[in-house]
Amino acid sequence: MFKKILIANRGEIAVRIIKACQEMDITAVAVYSDADRSSLHVQTADEAVYVGAAPAKESYLNIDRIIQAGKDTGSEAIHPGYGFLAENAEFVQRCEQENIVFIGPNSKAMKLVGDKIRSRQTMEKAGIPIIPGMKSALKDISKYKSEAEKIGYPVMIKASAGGGGKGMRIVYKEADLKPALEAGKREAKAAFGNDSVYLEKYIEEPRHIEFQVLADNFGNTVHIFERECSIQRRHQKIVEESPSPALETELREKMGAIARKVINVTGYNNAGTVEFLLDKDKKFYFLEVNARLQVEHPVTELISGIDLVHQQIEIAAGQKLAFKQKELQQKGHAIECRIYAEDPTNNFLPSPGKILFLKEPAGPGVRHDCGIHSDCDVPVYYDPILAKLIVWAADRDKACRRMKKALDDYVVLGIKTNIGFLKDVIAHPLFKAGKTTTDFIKDNLPDWHPPEKPQSLKELALAVAAFNSQDTNKQRRGYEAEPKETFSPWNKLGKWSIGGGK
Ligand code: MV4
Image (cartoon, rainbow, N blue to C red; front, top):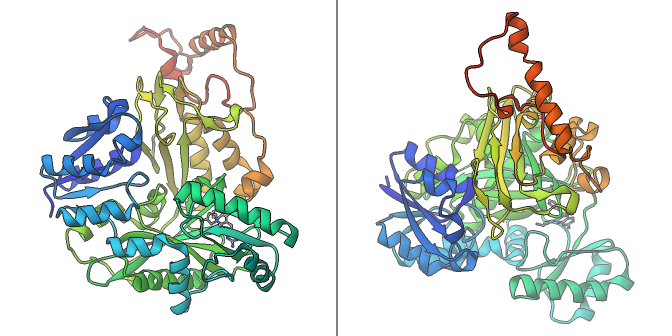
């Protein structure tokens, strides 16, 4: 087993991975930029190396600096987390050349799954269901007209190098095809430096269902069931859960078997995710492979009892999978809410700044994967995810109730967050019924605004005074207890917040 691992990331995922290393008696090395000198991941790690200026390109995306930090600290392996260099095949190749183990797939498999057109071809050959459409990109825009006719409208334009919704366009009729292709190509060029696009049949109101897979370096693979990730806005997931309310045992087994096959035919190893779209008739189609540990991995951990980061490290160290598919079981129900520093009153734009106070929810079945602390700064430079709140309970209804309570108990003061929005997603009757599709937010909570006006200072002062005089303990005890400490309203923060909360 490794003695030392460098974690090439920041925020909640770096903290998550550092803790796994420490549990395994592995020294965890953090890296940090100018903006993260006092961040939680740096405080949590055993060692920390400065890697550059605040902009990600100069620090967390700087391959030379990260590799050098690995060498300088004698790290035997690098865990990339998600984002930054996690799916950068060039970085994986550099690690391979420098004899540092990359905790993730080999560079060849990563390249293959990163190319949508090539992976569509690979899947079709292997008999894996793909969305009807083109299997190669064409040079001449005029040739796409007949392709669209063959597929049948509506069609979707996708970037060959794509992912994440960039360059994607829905086209309902022929007259719109050419301008949409031109716009899609421009966007793909800007995002990926490659303007190659292709057409697929547009699947209406699908569910996004993904399967967690593990593959060791000896050809053994398992899937660890699915995650339902349909609740998202502008291609950013917000709420994820496992199991999916849409799958029965038979369909789950079919999709799981296909997910393992996808891993086999791509020569993939370590942890990965196979994404599917599920249409209204419950037909499923392969979408893409995510070659990384995902943000939403905790829901899988809670229903399976498997620590995915431990598994990743063991696989990377050359160990064989210690369990077989038939030994795996789903137990209970898990839901994750992503906590973002964003302003719901301003089009959900990032809302960085200083966190004055944080109260983390806790209790049975409540997990909080967190990258922040009271009095820390949320920099403008990176993804605005602050933390993830994950709950487990015996069934979906109990998990929803547990999530509601945990969100009520969650307090972040100083910056704006999406917590109020999340409460309304969880409380929505269609969510409660498990009727979640990728259009859920757009159709049901399109112009969400905080339900209450921000309170005035006077109202706040009155609220504090009211809390003070209504001390339930005092009432129960029936006498005035001596105050042990100076009164602090923070001790009483429960279902309460400044502005925006309910
Ligand atoms: C689609 C689709 C409908 N039909 N492809 C969005 C991200 C990219 N990885 C694939 N995506 C989609 N591809 C066809 N042929 C709908 C989506 C889609 C989506 C997929 C997963 C999760 C959220 C989504 C939100 C909007 C659209």
